[in-house]
Length: 271
Length: 191
Ligand SMILES: [Zn+2]
Image 1 (cartoon, rainbow over the protein chains, first blue to last red):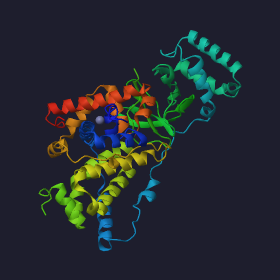
Image 2: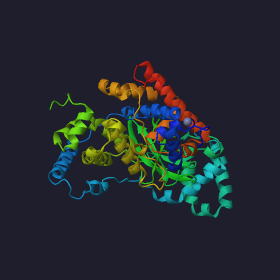
Image 3: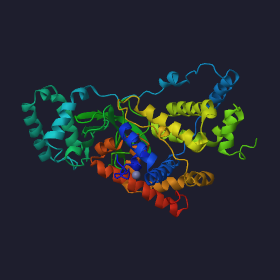
Image 4: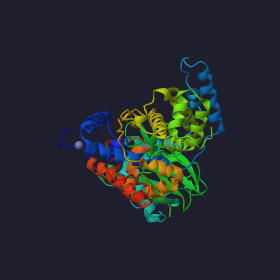
């Protein structure tokens, strides 16, 4: 980065920590000798430091203070004893994510989602599909795909379930985006008290991450399950959904998070 | 010691002398915002508690080495919380491209820190509302950067927009935030 280039373009990203180590080194070297860029970075950094205040207020359990004071007290009396790890590893086991239990047929249904998402582009699923015309059109399309795709022969039974759910249940369309960022996603509430489903083929996300689906039902947020990027997947939701519920997707480490850690990349209120 | 009478810097000095009461004061003053930040980032109470405990312990251990010209004590503490939270969030993913904010060099010749005012007024809701009133794309970009630890390259991938657009949104978002906070006399002083 030369003096002529300055860091204007990267100053905000740098202050927010959203640059690669290489870029950070470049910006760091530049602002060491350029006071106008340094001022700009510092001003952005002051704003970044306010962001913790924007977090919803949460209070740690009193145990944290007790443990902290006990550990600090111990270190005080023998100041140079080797650092002991905090209880992180012992308590890490508390952080586990229970995926929704997939019904047996769901295992083979990912292929079906691709058919619905890829071949039909969820055509006609935007409205609640209730007519016999829809039924036969969709069955014909799925059947055509089945003839072309060996995988789908194995998933024939699953298709049946999904198509039946689409035809008889409520379907909400969450398609969006364009081209490489195209979202293929529908939420289905099958009839007769079955749990809702999400069928989706979602765009690329950073390595090691997955989509996590969330459902706001009667005012409470529930984790619904994990979805991979760039291939069709079906998940069964842990409950039924109804109008007014909100379905949303965040991006999380593949083990899942207990609360969303990224903003919702897509959200939709079921109407 | 009267818990309200000591400045952060006086607390740090007492911490450097291994005064446990100073640690307790620092904890009482900042544990809530530290924990709120950790929980917002990692989305898990157990992990957030571990991070907060470790961060205060780190301050306790390193207070005697801390160079005060690097900034206020709470900035240091919260930078540690932020760094460790993002690390924790990303530890199960493979992307190791995040640059911890507390390792970034910092200039000492800063204008007065708006934090002080915000903090003393406990006006978190003002910042929350200001962030919430940014245009959606700008707010999401800032949140993906600061709270989710993504680089601008990753954000461009996540949001499906060119790199230049992401940099522009981060920049415009922070400038808009400043304008909103300035209106409340909470923003940073003009450059
Ligand atoms: Zn410059």
